[in-house]
Length: 425
Image (cartoon, rainbow, N blue to C red; front, side, top):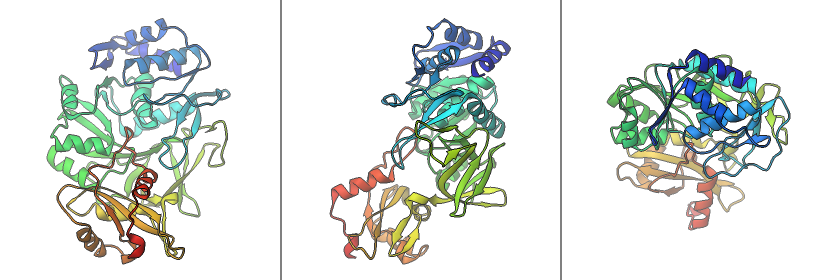
């Protein structure tokens, strides 16, 4: 199904530019890319593991589709999962990012992959005359569904930049009249601060982590570029999209459901996704949360007036003396302070059975500010028990290539560091 659809696209657009790799200067029309996939050796074995950030990744996918092999994209430093090939009709494996636990492998059919690409292209309005600029990982679900599948199944050209650095982005946009640019918040911040957002950007996308409201407004004011927040999951592809043309007023609002995606909220307040793009199963150990076209997320959400509002993640909730709070709510309040550039809130053990947790905050600042100053600021916005007791001021929060920041990793760092004062306050 996937390879047949690609061959149709290649015939229809045969002489149009399909792919440019800026690092090597190589370029392919759709017909040339089709020949590259056909001339390559057939895939050896039942599974193929495309890696890297270049044209070879795309050609490896085509080679696997042609051979009828299972595709399992990997990050550059990732090793193949120790799992057997999934049963037909599954043709694709994704690996979760493991920011909230051990990584899982998800199996997809060709129809499910195609449905995700269709939902994304239709909802976002991806266009052949607005090529995708590839700076995010093509191995991650976000990059595979927004870059690779639109190229191969919908004829959306792809320009592969060698790196997401500001100067590389400037050079990548040269000679291209219009671009679609999918990225993560950390990239948008770096490009904004370096004044490197290309004027050719017609569609700006952000996913992988919450898009700070202040950053969204700052980019719009400086560049007249509206960053569209996109929310999805490895298990089900795209979920919601902010299609508005002006910056949001509420950071918790992530837009409307993608076309052909149905959302509900379960009795404990978590989002449930139903669509033809939902993965077949966790592999090789199925779980009830993913089955029969339905994915049970752990994201707490509110559906109101057709819009989706994220309220936090169920597993991230902090328990302070029997009262629970989402760290996302505290982070949103912290980001309203003019000195706060980035922040991450999580719990650490209180050392007091009656209290359960204390709240810790890691804050990256744009201008000097003290923990006491931030504490007083939050007291004007939140109940006193929700104000962090532990404060750290790192130079950065070390988001990975997918834009993810692990609360568990920062909690471990803080505990390893010791000298926690919160329990005594």
